Length: 409
Ligand code: PMT
Image 1: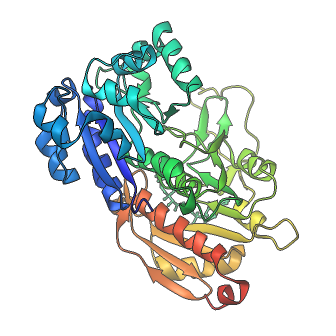
Image 2: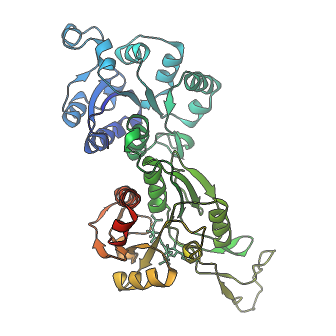
Image 3: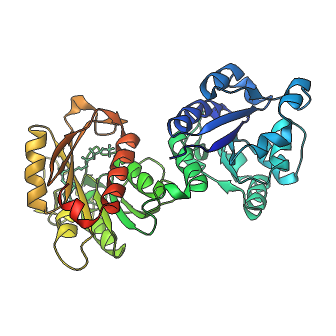
């Protein structure tokens, strides 16, 4: 989707610089040509040789190099690019950009360019929230600099909070949104995606839940957004960051998840990847259930939760044109998924084995089978964001086909 696009990647000096290597790989997989500028501090974290090997291009770093300037003037570096990307955008480089300094090759190229610039900040939480950085970020945003991240999470400095650089796939998606709008076949389509677990209260401090991390559902929301869809992600409690370019609604229970899906309004696409609890406690107590000496453990009376997928699949004027469910199985994966597609009335089911040995719950990879009216496709084991990208691609294809071809799917 980035075929023919040229990215000038400025790699600055921060611990997150290692993610630049993964980013180059991702961009090249998507067809982009990548050329790197490495700052002096950046070279303390990644070597020019690694960048050169992955980009298959030479790496620029010295503004006063006679050879570099005669082969490729620093102005030419930005002229040759469709987009400049700064990874990681450190507090120092953001400050220099905001001040208009040009004291090394990276800042000079960034000052001299008339091309769009995307920055992926990464720094300690206190540096990110410092008034100076906040002001610099505001200045840069006002000038039209694009930002991806930072996200919230555990940092190399053993602290937690905003300041963690976005993952390579998210940065690649943001790049695609900026330079390849033609690769947005779902532009104008609206989607709702459910993700993560639900929590069903027993009392104010205890709940029933499951091991879903939200990785698969969040990746699908991001992949649909990358193809241009307007996405509402309805997520149960998860520890991962909200995907960029997506409206995320945080919920706890299945009832709340259903209400949020319905509040998302008319959508063309619904993807239910959440691990919704099938049952909730019939009468959760308002106060903590006390353990009384000698008394038996309390019994939990369960009652069914609403089935969100079945509700969204109901025929009617408001039904999304395409409803995709998941099937989490531990045995007879495909057979159960075929049956589930019929029972719930959805169009496609993505079946996956969630037996503990597979690591599907919470892991980074997934082995899925796509079940539709046309039959069953077995996909190889893939990273969850690759499963998401393939699924989003299939959804885009579905909408690109005339209705007659869809029936023959
Ligand atoms: O979050 P991860 O750690 O990345 O793991 C991903 C995943 C394993 C959670 C995901 O790939 C997955 O399989 N999601 C569906 C989990 C599930 O609840 O499956 P199910 O077979 O029990 O339900 C079938 C379908 O009905 C699902 O689309 C589910 O979202 C939906 N459902 C179920 C019950 C209910 N009350 N409402 C629903 O909408």
